[in-house]
Image: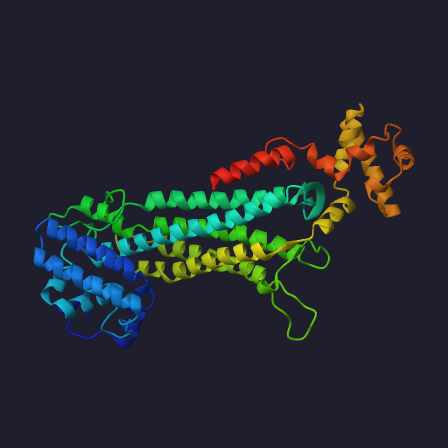
Length: 457
């Protein structure tokens, strides 16, 4: 059913109709569209714009349509009669209840209707994203709680740098995903104004109560400018930007899991349930899920870039270009949420090789900074201490030893300042235990961090 056919004398070209339709993808709005229509009809009746009889018929009809769509007895027909979800719902309603269905659209336009549907949909998706991030954060916190004593090398430039703990390492990802959740909540606050009642862009002569409509739909209030109401997609761009940030964090974590899963590292073992094999090499166990999470980040970025490009040159108010806000966004949302779910499951099933991690920390001279600090504590200027330990590292490389494995005589060959207490000073346990400033990996610092993380969840 076309809602605008009165002034037209020719049938729409079939290719143009196919190019123009959106029911094939905006049908996922049906819950939001029906919810908005119920609120609109309720307000219209309260303002005496339509009769109580019409309201009753409309609400009963919409409720029945929702039930049938939910249970599958009513399905979407992708034919030329319905170009979008709005005409499908209104057309189906009118077929069932007659003229009362034709009065539903009083005082609104598809411009403010689709703006409402998108806002309701994105609000629901933000809530789901926040819940999924909370589950992921809970899994990361569990890893932190269980691994405060799991020593591993920390890296800069992908080179072993200083010893840390697995709890400390995952604490960094906790902070990333916590910020993501916070950004989602901020986005929700900004979008939570109701555009319904803005009309095509100039409001309406009907005495609508936009505050009532906003209240019925759990908005904080109505939007303040009717032109902006129908042409605003900032909230969607912001949400896609937040999803892109989340996808980037997921990709960074996926990359580390991929590296840690290699034979060269063997820090982790990804469960069979999140791995695949090779069609030709029987020994292979590939981290395909982690790789796909890393790869699908590009799809989320693409949706954000695509919508920014669509919106960059649009004059006020509504333009049909804005129909392009949906397909890319839907794909990005589906993709990002799937990646969050899969990362959570993969972490829950993953095994960590504690011994391998600690041996890697010892073998990478990650305690070299602590050896320099030891000398500083004995009165050696730091720059001299830095050079002394550099010489010790060269000696270790030549002799294929770790710093811990050098004899006291070997230490003293380079500097007579070294004494027996050097071994305790540069042990992995001591290196970590001494670092208890806020945010550091030491046991006291990590205890406070984990307590804070628990409270934030």
